[in-house]
Length: 325
Image (cartoon, rainbow, N blue to C red; front, side, top):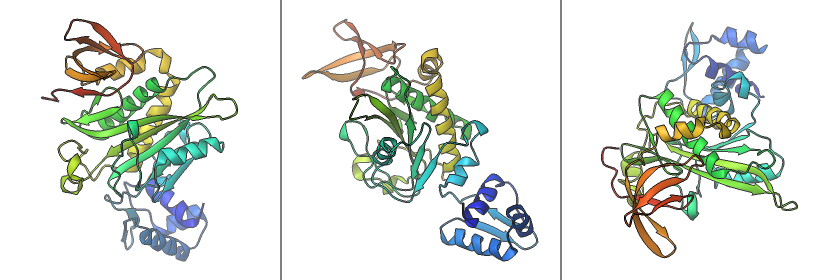
């Protein structure tokens, strides 16, 4: 790493206190002048650093640029070896993660971007990804032989997002089947799980989990068609580095326990679907139903208005009312 990256790593891990120039110089075996130059370089790159004579340097509370150092400072030792790449701008983190996966990137690789120009959701929908106010991340997972459960991985990711938000805020997000996270009746997170296929064997080489969280977008900056639909965590003080670290660890923990029943239980506990009246398409016909539960495989259990009980394994459902959610 460069000197400025080394200093950023120290400041991220010591955000609660000032770190003196002398301490930085001794810790990194560099001169005080080199410390000063590195701090200036970090500031020029957008990091907000408080410098106080006789106290030293400290990252400002509102310094919220994403960085490898910032994520690593918030990861447990178990996951500190995960490769992390942070892009200033990209088309889609999932698109780039697929390329990395096919080039041999390992399990747990994390890709982050400050902005996406072509963020994607399910069924070809676009995902609004403005600079600096959201978390746009993709995680590469390497499935074991015979383990190809993209829906359960999506479910694990949704649980990971909820747990991360619960840990870092006082908010209680809920999950709309199967891949959206809601808060106060509005969508604050979308999840897109995709497979990277080995063209020679035809098997799934990697699974890419894309997560987009709206952390602090202002309502008036949303495209007109998203207003009233898309929400936000409403907290521009939340550390996106810490949020990314918590979600990454949650996804990897969930991946390791997919078959244990813990994930589906946690998913059910955070679902906003129970008892809701919904509509969905079956072939060319739109049907109405009431949600009765979620199966152990993650399917949506519903009772049609005509009295038939069925399980939905895929597709889009529309909740007819989100009152009190």
